[in-house]
Length: 575
Ligand SMILES: [Zn+2]
Image (tube, rainbow, N blue to C red; front, side, top):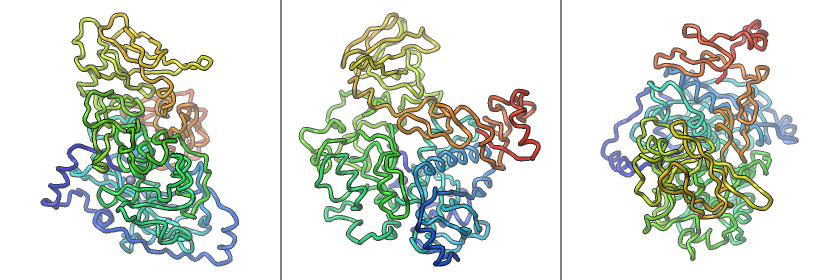
């Protein structure tokens, strides 16, 4: 998955001339993954024909395993911890709705990747796993990719991927001097991880030809040069979603470098979906087209109604599908590139300084995007002066905040000059009979907190103690476009339909309750530490624990819960 960045073009041009290898890590596996084109080889197992017929009788929940020795080699406990935690949430997400038709009854032989034999330290025999991931870290400062993933090895007889890799780019992980990782940042890393796993499971250009019963006319590049897939479930999804029965190909991303083209849904058609190629600091959701593709591959049984909503292009008809922003009149999804006097809050009211721009993938259409993460849902950089000014003017950046056109500023402060100034306010939609209204919270710890109510679309509100005014959004649209969960699921769950799907061992509406009986047993890190300093010493412990020296020790109230684990010598991992 990539972040779209304005420096991208320049970077690409420079790379042609300066082809130095930016990988600081001289591991043979990573070098091979970065340099070689994906070629998939079959893995044979010793499963007998007899077992084959048994396995076809019923599917079973997909089981994952991983190899994290590459991560540990970096010896940065914070990175290892956050990646493994994100992975745990992502695996748990897929376990909720994906079954494999041919589960591995015996052991999974991890022997080779697409480039041939794996280095000896990665060769393994694994029990109770249908898909094994080799994890890696690298530093690629020149390019804007967050993570890469792919399938390595396919299993006879149905050619389902059984070994894959995920490589994270250190550039997008917290730097060594950063000691904590917020729920907002976790939320993004979890989405990236779910996105990458999906590439390895099913969504890679190099995998289509191995789908069960696929024919050559069902994938490839059409006569207009667009990559497409034409499989029954995804076609049916697209026809229903756009309300257009003439759709006979689902378009994939055509531009972008190798690795992006042909393995993502077209951004202009599926903008909000998690499986488009770029994160544009907006809301991304898991839509039903991904369930449909899993089913179309023929490798998986899928619970088809397990997905979030997709508003982009919904019920907009064939004109939207075939002409996108050139449809007449221009669909509301796209903005006018020639007009910079437009609201800056984004398609889902998710940000504060979104601009109408082209993307690198689509040079024709205007999208309301933010190239540098101007999201209302959380802060990443406490030194960001634009956000500091907004906070002083009454904005808050939180999971339930949204962008509102507002130039409110407290008496005595410097007024905003931009007529389309947007700010971030915590919001709540209130249904009263048939009528919807929005409660906005203005002010933060710095200012007095005030609540105001939007009752009409476009209503203008003044607030006591503030200069300027606030413009209410389209209320029904605003209230429909809600995608976040409380506290971003505390970094321990994936948010779908505004409900957290918590990783094993966590529960509650924000996954904040720890169920000690179910915690997955892993042997890494200080299990009770939540924040490390740059020397990898613990400086903050999870709630039930207190810091003594650099170690987290149980407070008495939680000792009872944990005593049996301590007695049998298990080592737990918590966030
Ligand atoms: Zn991707």
